[in-house]
Figure 1 (spheres, helix red, strand yellow):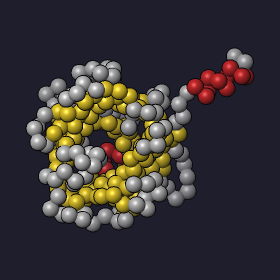
Figure 2: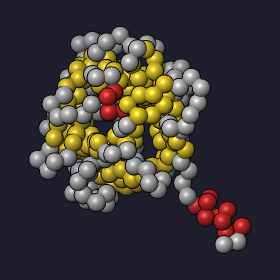
Figure 3: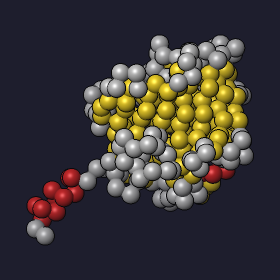
Length: 246
């Protein structure tokens, strides 16, 4: 292959960077599955930090088809998840894979529009699904929307890849692709056995989601904070079951 053709081939492959297993001074090894245990029946109850009466309950459940889900149920529209002005609960399919714990339905063949969406939004008013969402990784050999390496890895560390999602609104039949997105995740310890996972989900159209999960070893999810900006200077909202550091 000629050098110019090599360059063109490399440019055509979506970027991926992962330094979770690279040796670096000052790093500490953690085991991802110990910080995000996903056995069915586990429940986390997270209260809004500014309005404690607003509660999001997150439960790990196994569907009849064998897929694993994290179910986010809230008692107030502005508790945690969902776009402003919506009143939906969230069924988030997760795969506890050999390398990554990541978002995605473990059933199906990852085809967009198949019978196994990766993300279902359910109206709290009617109890019916209102959105189906399918995730697609644009980076070879890497799942879309990974949360944490399952095994041992070093922190602080980070990983970057590209992703895209396909959404279908059930009431109207509207459906379409998102812009291409960058999926950036950073892991660091912010307290004894307290792991912070910072997600930056940004898209080519200028939209973005900036969210931090706090995972306690042996317990799992103890806090989530959302921000309006990547620098984490403009706080949006947060939920937690314990006092977590800013």
